[in-house]
Length: 323
Image (cartoon, rainbow, N blue to C red; front, side):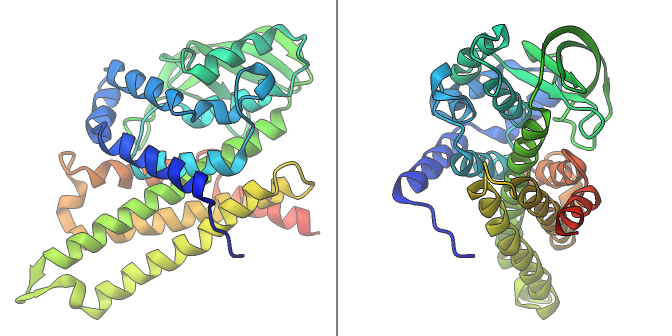
């Protein structure tokens, strides 16, 4: 499939790229992992001001969406820059709340989500059993069947990515019945896939740069055929994943949306994980060091690999849709 962003969408991506490049996101992620949330929350408000969170909120509630293509574009940049925080969960929660009748009291949260004054997290058991950054979120939601509940949280679970702090949840007061959990899950998986492609793309970029400058036997290691083949494999995987992600975004609202999302998530997860493994091989031991910024993305790629559904689970959904 040939897909090209229009001029407005490209400008949006470039604006986010510039904003995040100036935000020193690696330092923000390290501070977030250490429990210092204010730099990350300041960045959250900046991104909300750029319209990122409004993309998942209906216009009737002060948002601009849901706009899946623009969401995918935004989350690709969030992935490239390794931005910490429950952005995926907030977007999925906004889509679910936006499906409720306007008379539901729960829709009152949507304007605050759109303008960045409310951070939300979401658990969708069994596929998404933990709420990301629940201790920071002003709103934690959990779905039990079709019942949407406000949730409390327990202790943090250990994550492969120290900037992704997962919390078990305890279901509380029922807010409403008829929650659109399936649609929230699909949107969460879609933007997580976009995030993964962004992570993988950035890892490929830094690996290529490193291969051009690191020398062995008097030559840049990028001149060795074995290194070139590894980098080419990473590029091919990401280039196959990207159109699947945008194709799924374009199918939003159609009967095939869920299967398209699963195809995108499986491909994005595998391609980003491959890019992370190759980045480690190209960089050598430096790729493991905490002080080296790409190490943050290497760990994030592994953590997101199974977030919002493992590749095996999503491949099973695609197969079920084909039967």
